Structures are given as C-alpha cells and as structure tokens.
Image 1 (spheres, one colour):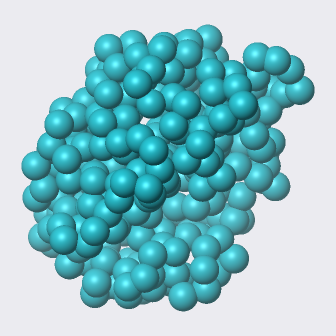
Image 2: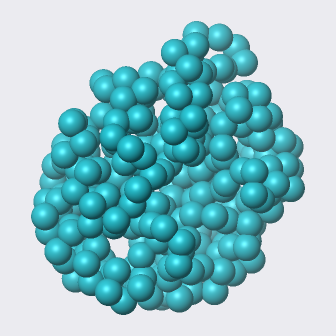
Image 3: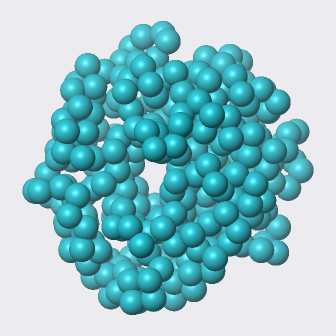
Length: 290
C-alpha cells in the first residue's frame, strides 16, 4: 500500500490556512462551494476562503497560503456541497452533470488547486424523496469531473456517511456509485461521526471500515477514516480521544493492512497539532517537515 493520507477540512479560518505547513497533513480540503435552487449554475463560496466577488474567487491570502502548502507537498482541494445544500438545489442540477462538472473544474484549474471533493449529504435522493436520482447524479458528476480533471494531475474525493455504504440500510446508494464510478475516485472520506450507531464506537467503526474497503470500486488505499477533532466538531457522542483512535483504530487497521488514512473535521480545532501530530506518528506519515 501507499503511504497513509492525513486529510483535514478547512472552513472557519480561526487558525490561518498557512499554519498547515506546521502540521503533518497530506491533504487540505477547502469548504465549501455550493449552489442554490434559485441560480443552480452560479457557484457560491462560503467561509474564510471566500472573497466578496461574483463569480466567487478565493481571497488573495488563501491563494498565497495554497501556494505555500503546495510547495511543501500538501495537496489542496475544494469541497462541493456540504450539509446545507438542499434537495431543491441538487434537483436543478440533475441531468446537467456535465455542465456542472465543467464549471467546477474551471474553479479548480483557475485557482490552481489539486482536485475536488464531493460532500453530498442529500439522503432523500437515495430513497426516492428528492425528485431526482442521487445515484445517477453522483455517478454522472464523478465521471464528468474525471473527464475534465485528468487522473494523475487532479484528485477526486467523496465524503459519504456510513449509512450510504451499508448494505441493507435503506439508503445505501453509494454502493452503486462506487461500483459504477469508483475507478474515477481517488479518496473516500467516510464520515464516522454524527451517524448512530457508528458515532463514538471504535469497534463498530473498525468492523465497518474493513468491510467498506472490500466493496466493489473501493479499496483500502482509497478509504479514509473520518473523525471529529474535538467534542465541539460533531455531536458529543461522536468524539473519540486521540489516544483511543491510535490504540483502537490506527494500530489494528495497520496490523491488518487496512488503512488508507485518516480525515478530520476540522482544521481550526487542531490547535498546535494536538490531533494531527500523534495521529501522524501512529500512521508513520512523513509528508511535511514540521
């Protein structure tokens, strides 16, 4: 297997983005690009990375920080979607995935980023209650993005929740997404938080993660185990202390050769690297000299 990845989402800006050069991350994902149902093909950019302009652009400080991180070998991506993007917005985009992929790719290439993350959380579209087919949308968007953003130069990731990957759970549409478009996906950042019965349960997470690695279109190298940095970054029952993450998740998964890496939400809570440094040591990653 390749070296495990260490991924973090950057959103709030409470800690400047350039401080990531002091952390052992392999990937930083900027959050979020989104669309609204009122103007579906007008991209909206939120958080500390957004300059006040139309079309949306990264702030000059963000652009400078991105270059600094890239010079240190850290991949910087942009995330599309997020928990606040609505079914109505996705419904307006369904059937026009090729054009959506084009405008998303234009944002990536214009800002000289390393790829895009799809953080799709519209569960209703997996159970027939959103007015469009979530599986078809995600497959078409992923394959169109790969045509726009060639493999090798650009990376594509997805950030599904465990129920989307669980056979027989009722909303397991990502099983078909991976089967049909998994070859175009480089990383799958699985959100093992805010999702009972996985939240805060290392044994359940361990067992599920290993099964997900064996799904069609999936692999241990692609699967990234996502957790909150602190109790405040997710529902309280989702939090697992760093020492338990190392002992009960990282060590057994490494021993079983099932570990593509770890992801966290979110960067601003990793003060002084209290989360990333011990996790990196356990993973034995050496992406950044800190």
